[in-house]
Length: 207
Ligand code: ADP
Ligand code: MG
Ligand code: MG
Image 1 (cartoon, rainbow, N blue to C red):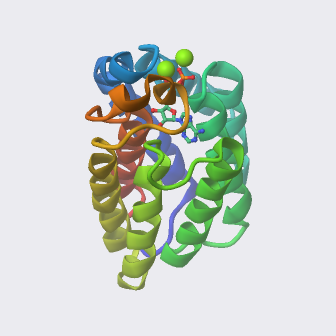
Image 2 (image 1 turned 180 degrees about the vertical axis):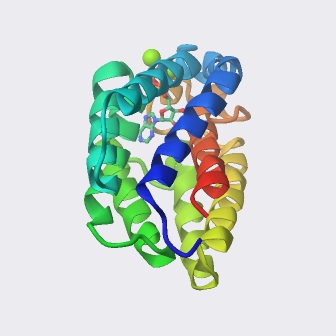
């Protein structure tokens, strides 16, 4: 549709939880090469807690929903990804407002969420983190937003995947992978990978 209902936001989160569960071993495998082999289990624990929180509560607005989700991730996930994704959802929800969420409004909220990740983690494009997926995704989203939600979200997911892959040959400059120095080159970043899964789940549920 042209605007997003609160129920669609919770569908997005349920779908993402399922996708994370299915891909937990793959994400942990990626993290075993350049990290501490816990990204899949971190995200799976966090998103299971999110699903439990969605089932336990009623949410009148997207802002309420994502506040709960952000707080749940921050408190249930140790490691970098908990505070980073938690901040993303807190900032994202904080920008949704009370009115209907159309393609343009969703773009504003996504950008605020990513700005939260940058504020918290201080990563720039090229540091081989989730920001390498998010930055091109936001650009592609904004370019396609005039064509509607579906086009914008598909473009974002595709550009995010391109950014994830472009980061693979790079040397990590943030997070645990940076401890490996040059040896981090040639490995796909786990957080960029889980971020693309989030965008793909958005394209499947929000449009
Ligand atoms: P940890 O590294 O604490 O074990 P995870 O394994 O769950 O946490 O998450 C690792 C992912 O977090 C990385 O692949 C990377 O994408 C992301 N990440 C780590 N540090 C940063 C940062 N400073 N800014 C943005 N993303 C980061
Ligand atoms: Mg890890
Ligand atoms: Mg860890």
